[in-house]
Image (cartoon, rainbow over all chains, first blue to last red; front, side):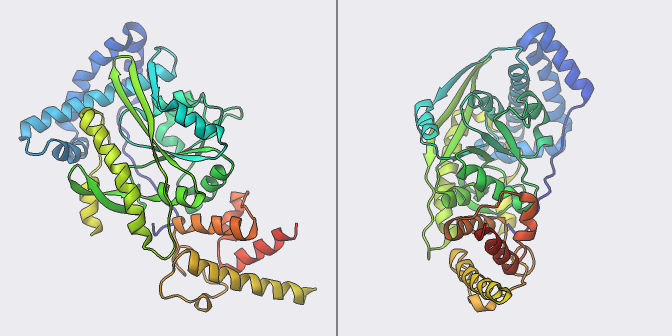
Length: 304
Length: 93
């Protein structure tokens, strides 16, 4: 990471009228009504949004190697539909319009960590619906810091009342001085949970590891932080199992430790690879719930 | 009084430089190569934000200090000298 500040660029899709249309349909016809609208919208993006399609194809080509152009288009379309459904679910859940059945796997282990008083890093990914998972975790009696720009997840920020004085969920912006690491370290030493995205670098340095059979560049910052704070990294996975069902899994814990005198990056690679393996198992099980939309494999080639 | 302070500052700077070289595994850099006023992040010594993680820990473990006010972070992390002054001032409290 050669910069002390990181400007994160992300293209936003959709407009106020479109969101209003989905919200109104959800209110009038419920989840299945809102889902119904998606098929046309997702087809529009699959046909005409070249950057979105390219972002999806980077993943699709590695997840379904050897598929023809037409088959890849169908995979992309299915991926867009699933992403749309999860965005609707997120809104429906956090606005309180629909109740979701959320099974939390690894709850006992998580509660042991919470009861131990130590902080830990919660590693999230662009797979499944981590924002919905956060609503489940917001019930834990511990401060939770999300390392993200508030404007990137405005809907989540507003619905989870992030930033309100009495709310345990707060935000640390990675765009501030030194990427917010001082605040992150202070939060961990105070026993808080710090949620960090583990699969996108956003301009930060990465390490090449194997992901879906090819070298991909994943960030290692979360592991450096955890190793120095001497705390564990809990990997958060959330999968949509049905129209109103989610599985939130926190059973995978990584304990990064760094030894002096040994190559730091080589040591970190082991932990990042472990995380990559967890991610790979997830996308193999749920191929249409990987919303990376970024060519992390190409990024690896550029870094070389 | 001022002389004592300067002497103490000098000691802290020297200790900090040693800690930086060992903790951050700075290759081909000796503690004496680091200037007191050399910029730590970006240009100068070229440290990055993940090195900052190690400096935060280094401050905690070796000097028992935490930086609470992030508005001051930029000033404190500017150079070895600014770090040393922060340590000196806050150790005395």
